[in-house]
Length: 431
Ligand code: COA
Image (cartoon, rainbow, N blue to C red; front, side, top):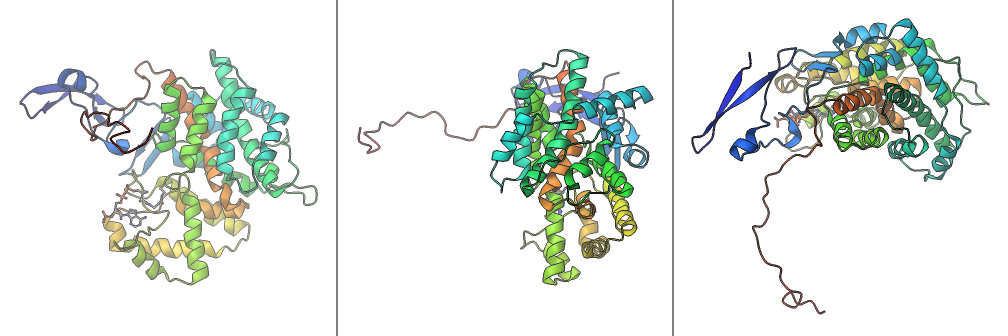
C-alpha cells in the first residue's frame, strides 16, 4: 500500500506526496507532481537530498559503512573476485558463468589494441598535458573510430568491452608516450590487470616481471573503485546520456568530472600531504592542529566523506592490501609509517570523532599505487579505469529506464526584474 507525506504550504494548501521505498528501507518523497499542482519547486544545491533515479546497481549505507555491488558485499568481491568479473557483474546484473567469463576475456583481448591512427593524436599532445585531459579527449574521439549505434544487445556488449579494454591500453600508451618511449602492445596470454602492468612497465632494455601480489592488489584497487552510486562523475555520465549523446561522449564527460580535486584527485593530495610531512619535518600534532583550525583552510586529506560517517569500508580493504604488498615486496615507504601514525592520532582525537571523520578510500590508495610504480600524475587515471564499469552500468540503466527524461533542473531566479535596454548613446558609447 502506498504511503504518503503531506506538505502544507504557507497559503494553507496541502498536498499528499507518495513515498517511494527502496529494498533496503530508504524512503523518498516523490515530488514529481509538486510544481504542476502547487507552482512550487524544491531547492537542493549539490542534490544532497535528491534521489535522481531508482537504481539496482550499488547500495551504500554511510552510517553503517556498507557497500555492495548488485547485493554482494565489497569485502567478498575484493577477496574472491577479479576486476573483469566485477565489471561484468555491475554491467549485467549477475555474476558470469564460466562460458560468459571466457567469452568476456576473449573479447577484451580482441579489443585491446588502439587504432594506429589514434597514435597520431597522442603524439601531438604537448608533453606537459595532464593524462586526464588526454584520456577524456581520446575517449570522446573513439566515437569517430567506432560509430556503431547501440541498437542491439550485441552492439552494446561489443561497445562496453571495447571501452573497458581500450581505456586500459590508452592509459598505458599515454604514459609511455609521456616518457618518449616505444609503445608496449598488450599480450594475448596475459589477464586484464597483468597486461596493464606489462604495458606500463615493460621495456626492451628492462624486461618487466609481473609480480603476482601486484596483480591481485591492482584487481582489488579497481574493484574498490568500480562504482559508488550517484557520485559527481556518475551523475554527469547519466546527465550527458540523458540528452541521447553517445556513450563515448558521456564517459568522456565523466572523466572530466572525476579530474577535479574534490572528486578523483584526492589520492594525489594525500601523497602531497604525507610528502610534506616527511620532507618538511612537521609533527603529527602540528598537522592535526592545522586541520582542526577554523582559521586554516587545510584539511586532513583522505579523511571524511559526504556519505560515510564511519570508516569507509573500501579504506579498510585498501589499508590491508597496502600493508601486505609493501611487506611482501620488501618496500620500505616512509609515507606508510606517517600515514599509520596520522590515522592513529586522528582517530583518538575528539575533533575527528565528533565530526565523524574517518579514513576514506584515498587515504591508503596512493601508497599502494606508489608501490606498484604508478607515477603520481596517473593516480586519477587509475581511478577512471576502475570507475568505468560503474559509469557504463549506470549509463545503461538510465537509457533503459522509462521514468527518465532529459536532465533539466530548475532554478530560483535572483536576477533583475524586467527592465529596458539602455541605448548606446545614453551609455556614452559612440556609434
Ligand atoms: N579535515 C578536517 N576537518 C574536516 C575534514 C577533514 N578532512 N572533513 C570535514 N571536516 C570538517 C569541516 O571543517 C566541517 O567542520 P565544522 O562543521 O566544524 O565547520 C565538518 O567536518 C563538515 O565538513 P563538510 O565540508 O561540510 O563535509 P562534506 O560532507 O561536505 O565534505 C569531504 C566531505 C570529503 C569533501 C571532506 O570530508 C573533505 O574535504 N575531506 C578531505 C578531502 C578528501 O579526502 N576527499 C576524498 C573524499 S573520498
